[in-house]
Amino acid sequence: MDQAYEKISDSELAVMRALWSAGGPVPLARLRERLTRERGWEPSTVKTLLRRLCRKGAVAQERREVYYYTPAVTEAEYHESAAGSLLDRVFDGSASRLVASLVQAERISGDELDELCRFLEAEKQRLLGEKDAN
Image (cartoon, rainbow, N blue to C red):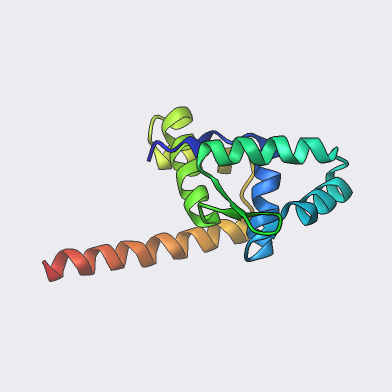
């Protein structure tokens, strides 16, 4: 998936997180207030970041009595796209190399590793079941 929203900056991601957590269209003033309070940004910074996100297709803008902003991509879609991009760029598409790197760097706890193993085993069984059904 080669989407422009894969290339959002850390600051733009903070705006996206504010939009995702809002659960619906957010007026510009509320976004400015929140991000100014949480991040110490100037109101013009918030507007600039929103304009960039709209240009990238990650955010939709709607004019009512004031401008409202809505994420045009879900958090799950962004995670999937960003993870795929990281996997391709850094690990040549190898998920096992990514996981090995995280384990070796001790970025995954024992509990997380157990959870990952359970997830992978369940997915393996699901895929085998689909294969047998075909």
